[in-house]
Structure formats: C-alpha cells, structure tokens
Length: 103
Image 1 (tube, one colour):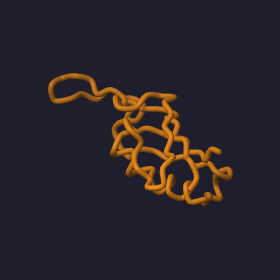
Image 2: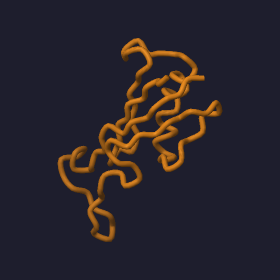
Image 3: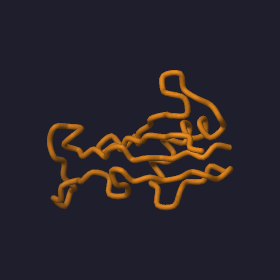
C-alpha cells in the first residue's frame, strides 16, 4: 500500500463562498475551518486507512475515496499520476486538499 501525503491547500471563509460574512446565532462571525490550517500536512502511512491524528472527521470522509484509490496504486485520468485533489463538503467553509503518493 502506498503512503499518501495530504496537504491543506486552502481554507475558505463564508465570505469567500457567499461574498458576505456569516454569523452564529450569538452574533459571532463564522471563521474558516478552525480544525485545519493552510499548508498543514498529514501522512497516511498505514494499511488500514485510518484517519491521521488531528485530522477533521468530516473532511476525512469526503476525501477518503481519493486516498483509497491512490493508496492502492490507482490514479485519476484528469490528474497527474499519483496526485489527486479533494475538498471538504462543508458548504459554508470548505477546505481544499492536495493528495499525493510519496516514496
């Protein structure tokens, strides 16, 4: 099984998505994802495809099909060999990832 590096490319704020700030019921502005950080890297290097420690559960479920394919030696015809891009499906503050097989 291949090792896959996950890189957080960019976290988007509600303002990036909707063109305006969004607010919690208590009046606080909703920020970009506060679990992950831009540029943060994770390594998936086990054979059971467990979520790396500190990685968002929601985002993990969204990108797991890409990770599984890469880890098992597969590729996607629209991406370079050993690379894929995925995103968290949080519609208000999505996060984009680069996934790449490493030696």
